[in-house]
View (tube, rainbow, N blue to C red):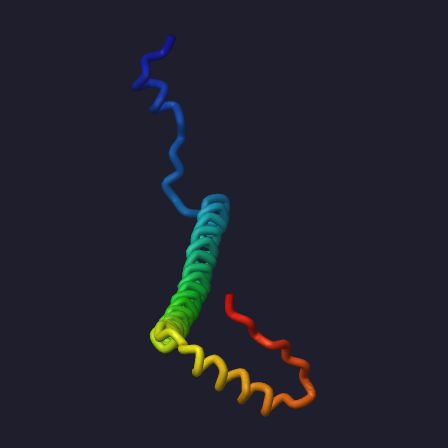
Length: 109
């Protein structure tokens, strides 16, 4: 059995770059460059999509806060209880504005 150093010496190592070595190197390089280009393109696309999502989320949050403020305003206004007179005035005004609508009498329990 040959010594391990002898086995390494037996393998010829090409020392020049010729057509047989240049083609695999160029194929590998083009594959790496293509992969990096695709990676960059996808990264830009996903960043753009992420920015759109962030902008829409911010817009929806602002709208939600606006609606929340309006709801709180309505709740504050509705928190005051109506008196019997207020209710009667509202019913009479409603009847006056809607003469064709049949509105039943309201009875308190």
